[in-house]
Image (cartoon, rainbow, N blue to C red; front, side, top):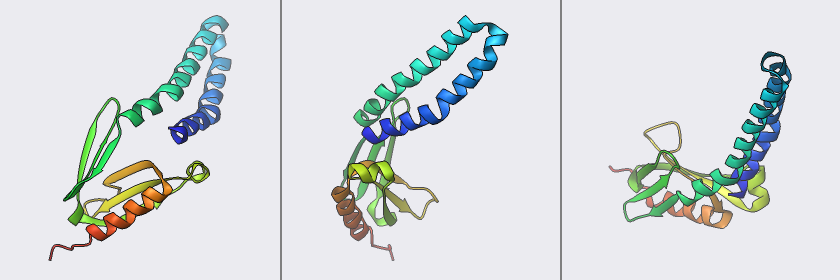
Length: 147
């Protein structure tokens, strides 16, 4: 949750505040300074609310399980997604770390199959040791080429 919150904070400081500030500056001539201030305040309040609540909701709705024949991943707050990745279809498994994840000792595990260009299974926010253990375990279990 910390990585998601910090990422959202960076987005808020680097994008939303400048955009809202610019819109407020130009909007005050069109709709008046009071209404512009209220709208700008509402947008920033909404973004702060999302910064505090959304990562907790996303984490509460995220689950994964390595079962006998597949990797099951559940995610999503408004729209739930359940992905079942058969272990025999796994082509390769990656671990990634962004700067915030490195600082916090976390990693993002991505599982790829031959079906597409993007990760078919994605496990964010894992402890680095757990991500490496899962990467190695899934790589070995998914090594059957089906021939």
